[in-house]
Length: 180
Image 1 (cartoon, rainbow, N blue to C red):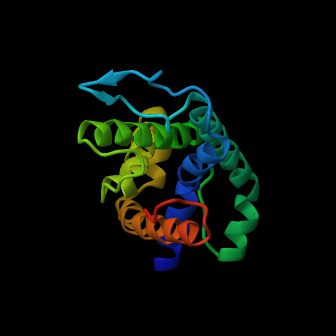
Image 2 (tube, rainbow, N blue to C red):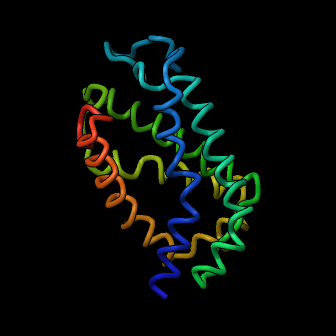
């Protein structure tokens, strides 16, 4: 039962876990806020770009399509029935993750934090809340069947742990300037 819950939660969230990493790799380009300020602070900052948002959304959506192809074999190997993703759900998870991260940047700027500054809790769950919210809006039936309360509980416990482990690893490898 625990293996099934963790496998389902991880699998269902993969299209949301990948977009922000893809956005960093494809980053650069025109900032979404166009350099505008509000209250003397940037609205979002240079780290949130149109190119990164598009690349992240595309990467997460394509991953959902690839997971659909792999689901039968992986389900069989694990002995767990893994969900597949309607296109709307894949796009919702990927774009929602990007929008959640953009919303967090807005909140960070409003609270006076600079780009890269830690904001515990928000840093680990912003994209999860955005992904789940948009997936619910665009694919409510799929969302309800996939994200049961036990699966959601695993997502909200597992994600911060994964976030910390991957960020510390990237920092130690010299891929990030800060370990959060």
